[in-house]
Image (cartoon, rainbow, N blue to C red; front, side):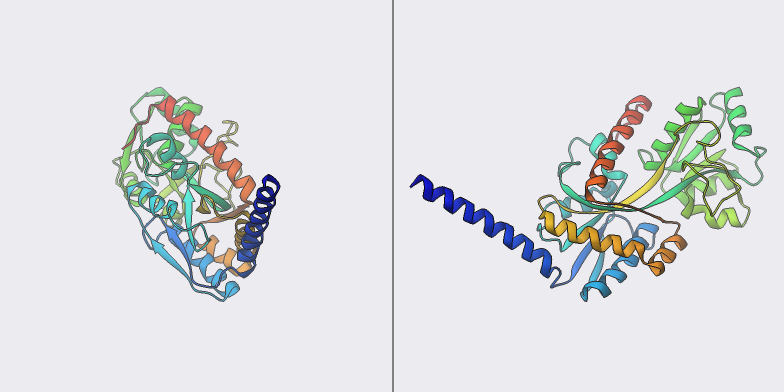
Length: 323
């Protein structure tokens, strides 16, 4: 009798393995939904729609985008965390995933375990800029002035507790300057405050201020990527200026509910990877200020863990509180 139970268990395991493999082979046979935790019209919405267009053709199935902003991405996260584990409901995840996991102990889902990472897709570089009327012509000029007048200069971001806010606090610590923080409800509002002379500098995604930089209403002093950007070749990186290993960017990836079969995750990973390699897709993403930066599921999972550790340290040292 005991032997029969073992055989039955083995048969069940084989059947489960076969069914998940078959699921991956036939996926998708109905429309796929990508949930975006941000409003329509922004760069993340553009990311989802551009990739959705490619995948819709590849899969011969409708891929529709469901914008669920609010709650610092928690509303969308809670919805997808309890969705079926069949690959038909996916979510765009970003830095906010690890920020929420650190700052919000009462999330309606496990901040780091509720989702199965599929792939890192893109990053959006950030830029530290001042008004074109500012007396600071270089990042060194700004830093020297800030150190000479602790607390007198200020910087704005969307925030608080945002990716940009944390990037700003990390910058302050690494550079050793005391800046007054001025949070705004959006990156454009933060930039407008700088152009209006109300705040000394802004730290925001390049995609949000590229038009202002081109119109010479803002002056970029540094970028937060390790290397210079093709779009701003004359602007040095903070790392390049001597602040070793400083790097901050908004990153975006795609995930499925935890428990989604590994074969299906692997297929989704391959398909999103193919989308990022498509030249037309790349052009559309670059136009939106997004830089393709692919990682497979395993490496993306490790990246998320490293980001959680990095953000947790900055949040603790800067004593950033949940909002």
